[in-house]
Image 1 (cartoon, rainbow, N blue to C red):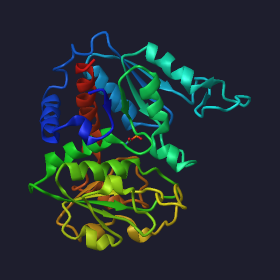
Image 2 (cartoon, helix red, strand yellow):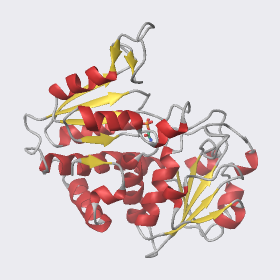
Image 3 (cartoon, protein in one colour):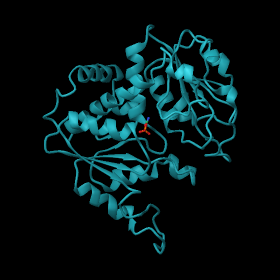
Length: 317
Ligand code: CP
């Protein structure tokens, strides 16, 4: 596997789940695979889970790990081509990327949507430059439009907890004070459809996601209708995708907060969220702390999803 952005990169998801279980049972079983290999993790944005779980995954595989926070200690990077660099940006990404590629065997990149230009964001302009100019296999640690390591961990978590073959999995928008990217909901919808589940996406009007990611899901603007009979409820905020409101907050409607009353509409559903989460906005304390909350198992499975992905990339070096 030379890159990792979508479920198609993993191939058969059931096989990937079996591989994840094997690694979970013995996470050091491939510790020789990464000996004398180096993983470079590049963060343009903050992270807790991705930073820790991806480093741990690389250590499970015996790799050396270098972490670079681009905005702390590195030269400030220009990302646009054709500009006169007379401002505060000292280095261009087009030199920095091949230099980074000199020091490693694999690269993981976290680079959120910037909400300045939808075409740039949805063409994955930053991470595609890493693919083109680094000379190394590259995986997304949440890029402008996708968060596949999270979605793979969510898939593993649902497979571990489901009690019916084809669960009803509901992705619901929930309120948040700031504009957030669409990467997590895009990938979640895409992966859950690829898994063969019954997938419902519920959001207020104006928040419909890019159809390329929700194809195969049922779309609704009625959260209560979506929640009825749900086996898994995945809450997430995202900003508007459609023009002319791309990247904007259009609503903070607290009627969309996932509460005990909302969960009572479901078929005793599990609650899921990728974290970090704003309590009282996205979800109430009693739901996230309750016995059906899977937020910690999901986070734990980030180590497992990353181990499978890095293992597959090492195998194809
Ligand atoms: N879920 C997730 O990606 O968390 P971080 O932003 O903390 O890495």
